[in-house]
Length: 116
Length: 113
Image (cartoon, rainbow over all chains, first blue to last red; front, side, top):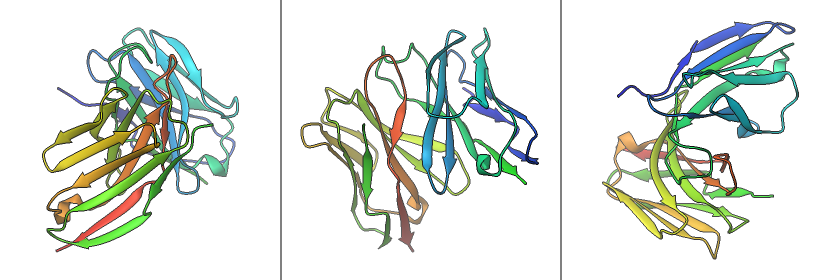
């Protein structure tokens, strides 16, 4: 069974540009969450989706947005990139509705974004 | 606000030693706790999930315990190997209609051959 996949794996952008990252969950998984990992702040929750609906959002500015499609694949978008957005962006998937089942969350390999 | 702390921040041991990694959390009302490992520049690999009603979980050489009342979890690694070298992260889910993981800062483990 294929794991969580994320594309692209690496990105270099310049300040002011926008970027879209993609996450394909494990087959049959319907919940997708996104995290930002930086050396200074560690792993921080961005948002989570279930059945194409954003269920929760972390404390990030409105430049960070996401969506989920009917096949459970998810994308996140960052507009007007800043230097501080350089990070490893990770997505995680799980099978059921958030908070309804105590189940393992599986992470993808991440997308490393460098903003110059 | 839930805060998760991991001690020590870094640990170096010789191969073959048994070791314990610690995780503490400030709010005992957690839904579950998960341990992960992360290799440099890579994503997170799930190691063990402990549900709120459980006290421990085992997988191979790994054993994780959970004491909600004291806000603590430990990850025990038996007979450590150089391949165990990685950063180990614990994370809690606080409950409610969310899978949001609140992560600790991690323990960087180096197992010397």
